Length: 89
Length: 106
Image 1 (cartoon, rainbow over the protein chains, first blue to last red):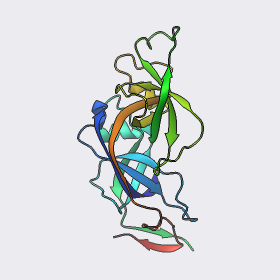
Image 2 (image 1 turned 120 degrees about the horizontal axis):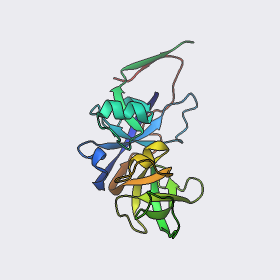
Image 3 (image 1 turned 180 degrees about the horizontal axis):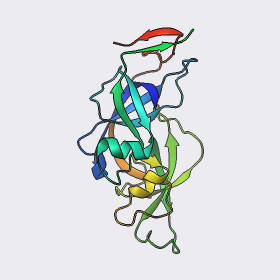
Image 4 (image 1 turned 180 degrees about the vertical axis):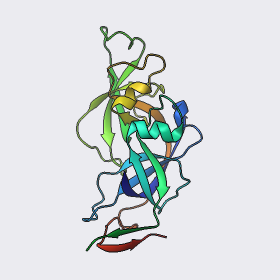
C-alpha cells in the first residue's frame, strides 16, 4: 500500500462494468523528495476528493476483494483517507 | 492504472486461441499532464476506442481479466475506459513531500 495525494478527477462514460458507480481519481504518490512524477489512476472506494491524502492498495487480488467483484480488472483502489503520518526522525 | 492515447491499430491474423475478435490498438502511455511516458505499446481493447481517444489502461494480470469472455489470455495491457473529461491540478498546488516527524493532513 502507498500514501498518495489526489490531484485530479477522470470522467469516463464508456468503461468496463467494474468501473461503474465509482470515481476514477488521478493520484500522486508522496515521497521524501517531493517530486511530481510517478502519478497514476486509482479507483475510489472511500469517497475521497481532490486534495485528500489517501491510502492506496496497488495489487489486483486485494482490489478485487475490496470491490467484491470477481474478475474486476482493477489494480489501484483507494482504501482509506489518511489523517496523519509520523516518520521517525 | 494509467492513461494512454490511441495512436493506431495492430492487426494480427494469427492469434493465441481465446483472443479471436479482440481488437489490438497501438497506444502511447501518458502521465497526468498527458506527456508521453516511454515508448509505444500494444493494448487489447474492450471499450471500442478509436485513434485519438484518451483512455484508461490497466496492466498485468488484471488486463486479461478485462476481456469479455475468456479471461486466461496472454494480454498484459488493456483499455478499460474512454476519458471524456480530465481535470488535474497544477504541480506545486499540493505538498507531495513527506517530512520527518508528524505530517498532519486533516
